[in-house]
Image 1 (cartoon, one colour):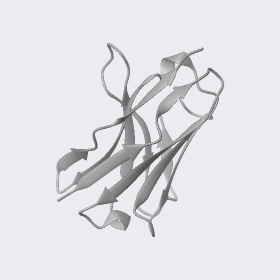
Image 2 (cartoon, helix red, strand yellow):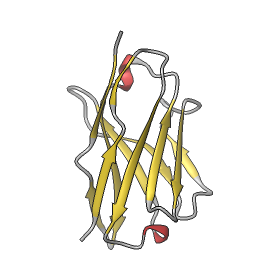
Image 3 (cartoon, rainbow, N blue to C red):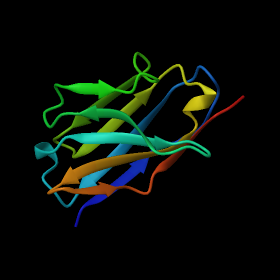
Image 4 (cartoon, rainbow, N blue to C red):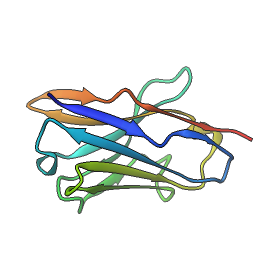
Length: 116
């Protein structure tokens, strides 16, 4: 079955950087676009970034454009999110996701806390 396991979260100071990873299994990774979402305290889950199957097309939420970079390694079945110039409002649980045959699949998430 589809499994998505996020890692790399933690506590970071404002202006710092973190790189999140998402290990995927149970499906043919290189045939599906992948997404990163986040959910901040008291907020709804929002789409942060999307990357095409081959990794050539990326899209970002306006709030992270120019600071976050989404990438993937199809040989390793792994999705990444490089986060730079982090702000307190970037705090939240980050999830990777795939839509497969009309159904959405999610990992359990990894917590990112941006605080001094």
